[in-house]
Image (tube, rainbow, N blue to C red; front, side):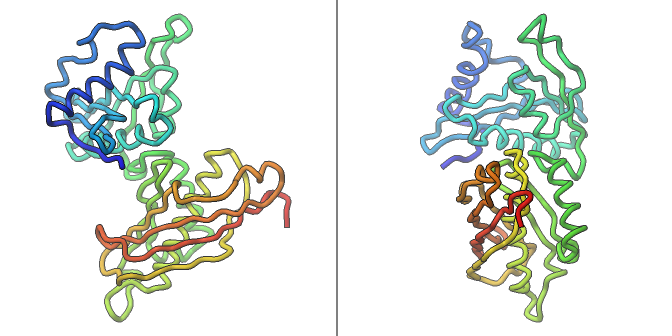
Length: 301
């Protein structure tokens, strides 16, 4: 189990700086101590830790001015790369920067991490000459807007929401919005006021629709991630209602709950995928949806 913490204890700081040195300094034969700088005392630090408290991803935010935050010293343990922890750190630091009143955030990136930051919604402002100097850093920037509160693939999510509202009008009527995507988790929310029954709670049919659309959305984005094409349709769905929804509902679907082989689409075959989502009322999961989806391969009836 992984979670985000602010390093506080001696053990926290040791595992934090050990990872920073191992990933960002040791490969370039830099001495111990070079992994720290003067901004560490005034910066904001976050790290993802495993069950034993060992850091698997880290990052720091400091402010260059009241309006400009800067993320530095981002690092993920090589043995945990590809698990989404880097996105988790970016999300935590961006939320902190917004809360502190920053208008934009900047990052310097080498070639090997440039693609990651572009996927997180950053724009390349100054391109480094990495031909002459492979270690030169590109300068990236993100101006905070309401849309790019979504950390990963914000443009894709904006396009998806526009598609929902255009092609599935009930989604706009219900007030469904995409609230977060990390590449591994997809989160939506709806307005209770537009889905309320005579008991002052959410219609069961609205809960089902929100849960279904959340799974559909995650599957759609995963097709784009894998550069696959196909039309997503619901074949079967079951939901368990555990408690009424009495506040603004949040739905979450996780990539770890997706089962099925999307690669068959490349062969012209339809793909069958199962997905799950949960509906939350506050911090409590009050409904669980399991859907069986078919992705129709192009040129197939």
